[in-house]
Length: 296
Image (cartoon, rainbow, N blue to C red; front, side):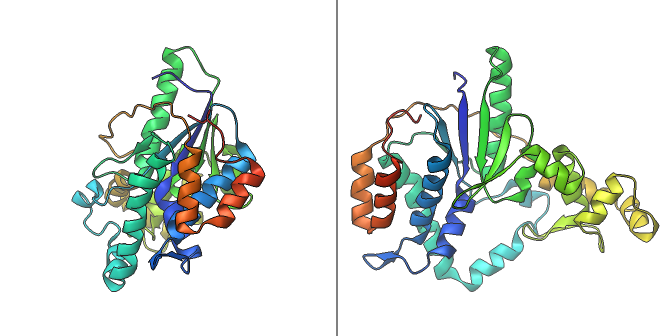
């Protein structure tokens, strides 16, 4: 695989959920289409701001299975409970996510679409970035930029030179390593330690009781004392276990090979008409988005 000068790595799952809840009333032929519309709208908003010739767009999806549950069965159990309480809603999200991965993106010409059993999108993104850095050394090319389109704070640990996070929005928000260091006072590679100590509510990872992110950061900076410090010091087995859960990539991710592609404008227009995404079609016409054949 030849290294590219610009990469857009898309955390598809977080975009799908954001789109689903932001556009719940959208329907086509009686079926909800909000996740598909929101997904494409956020992609369009990014490309409006940041399009460069030859940008390599890569999509990553969560597996429905999790290897992390083998070492920590409660992992994301709260989400599983929510799905049981709202089975129709979850089924609809899955249906639209599958449609995006299997039909919408391929029909538009996108070819770099990855999912691996047992792994989450952020695992694949972290591994892919490692691949790019290794390729850069091997090919003596260190001039490349990587944008990660995501709203997942777990990705903060990936921030470094030439890697930034783009938070979905209109316009998108760009979050650099310096932004993180100014906000938290630590380097991004310490973020897994913070999550291991404080826990992660959204993933149902239990941390040290009474210690939040600020306390964990103070501990790492040597500024925490008293009972909270004693609680952390006496909980090293929990922290060690949690580090395996919150550090990305989880071991075992397979290498991924990107391919060039030619965008299918005709298929995009047809899809917008069939799903009644006319506002998205007008936006793409006005801004020249989804008209380029040299996005790869």
